[in-house]
Length: 381
Ligand code: SF4
Ligand code: SF4
Image (tube, rainbow, N blue to C red; front, side, top):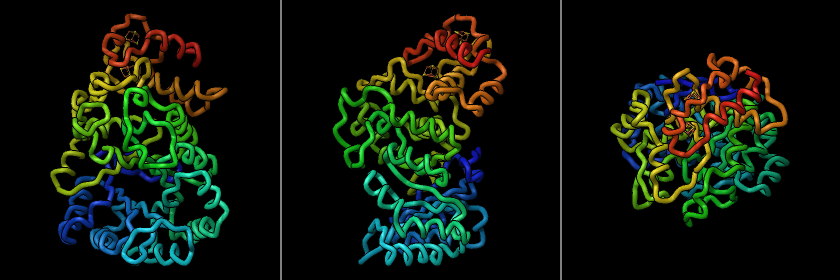
C-alpha cells in the first residue's frame, strides 16, 4: 500500500481508504471482519459520516485494540433523530451526536473532525457564523478532534473552505462524470441529465478547486469515486462505456491535491479488487482510453494527467510537467512550491526535442510539444 500525506494534517493516509456507508447492510460480525481485513491490507483511513448506532458500533468494535492503526474521518452534524439520518447544525442534536460518535467508536478523539456536508453558499454563511462552528473549534482546541475537515460536493464551497485557512482537508466527490458538470448546490442533479452538451470537458471551477487545494496544501479525500456504481456499468454510465474500479481509482488519485479515495465494500473480494490498484499495470489503470473511446465525451485538447503518452525518449514526465504548468498558469505568478516541484523533476520541458511521438499516444489530442515549449519558457528551463 502506498501512503500519501493528507495536506496540512501531515497524516500519512493509505491511497485506498474505507467508506463506511455499507457497513450496516451486513451482520455486525461480518462488517467487523471486513474492516479488520481492510486494515490488514494496509487501509488506514475510514469515513464515518453515518449517525446510526449499528455502523458506529461496528467501527468501534473493529478498532478495539488497534485504534492507533486507523485515521477516522468523523462527521460533526450528522445526527440520528427518530431512527433517521438528519443533517443538523442545531446544537441540541449536534453535541449529543458527536458524543455518541466518540462513545460508540470507543475512543476519545477523532482524527479528522468533519464539518458535515455543506453544498450551498447560504448554508456555508450560516454555519460560519454559528454556535456550531464555535463548537467545532472548541473540539479542536481540546483535542477531541485532531484536525478540522469539511465534506462537500460543490467546488464553490470547497474554494471557500480552502480560503478559511483553518480547514486542513476536504472530502469531495470526484469521478470523470462529476468532473464535467458545473458546480451545483443540488447533489441529486449530478446523477441525471447527462448528454453531449454537458460531457464537454472538465469543468473549470472544479479544475481551479483542485489546484487551490494543491497550492494551499489542503488535502483531498474522495467520495463517490464510482458515481454510485454507475460508471462500472455500461448501461448506466453517462459515457456509454464501463470503467473498472482500478481505472476510477487511478482517475481520482491523479487529480491534484488528492491523497486517498474512500471506496465502499460489501465483500473481501471488493477490498482485494481495490487494493489490487497498488500493483496494477499501466494498461489496467488506463482510464484515458476508455474516456477517449466513449461515444459521449469531449476532452479534446485537455490534459487529464493520465500518463498515456509515455515513454518520452528524453525521459520527460509529461503528465507531471503538464500538471505543474496548469497549476502555475492558474495564478498571476508561479507559486514557490510549484517552482520547486518543477525543479525537482530532473528532466524538464526544455529538454523536449519535439519528436511528437507522445502526441500520437495521447488519446485527447493534446499538443504536447507546444506545451513543453511553453512550460520551458514559463519556468525558465
Ligand atoms: S498529454 Fe495526453 S496522454 Fe499525456 S498525460 Fe496529458 S492527456 Fe494523458
Ligand atoms: S515531443 Fe517532447 S515530450 Fe513528446 S516524446 Fe518527444 S521529446 Fe518527449
